[in-house]
Length: 192
Image (tube, rainbow, N blue to C red; front, side):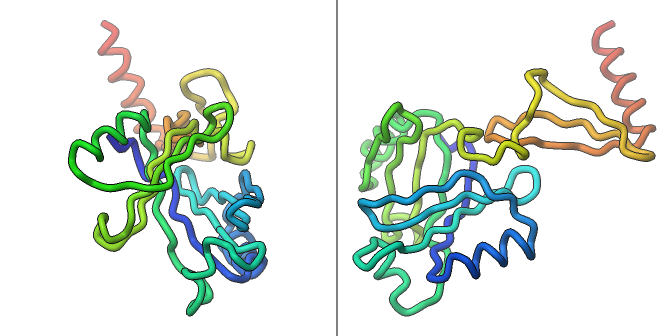
């Protein structure tokens, strides 16, 4: 049912301080973000390396759904988002297993469908299950920019081979010239 962990969401009081830490100090690349007026919070996705992401969420006004979580702390891990291929099938599986969920929501144009499993039903962790296309939420520079299935690029004494990842973004393997030669030989042997 679960395709992968998409991101870890971190709730924080001071967005600018957290943004500076993750983006300017640790090198995270900012992606999509937006205000959610109904729940009174701002969210922004950040990419770390090839396939890791975090989301920073912060209240924008009193009465935010984050008020209780941040009441006695400056920040912390709020939830883990797990990508599912089909949210309807995920709901059915939870229902059949007797696992309660809440917050089922489908956003316009089907770009994001979600539900949540309460920490009391998930071993102390708030879990968000979501159906979406991962690249829709990433910065342009961390997306695979080519319509081909792979990209090969020399890097000094090595060769970088990049692939689009089904979870969005790019996976790159760096091979020595000897490893690249061995890979080529193995591929040729398969075709024979």
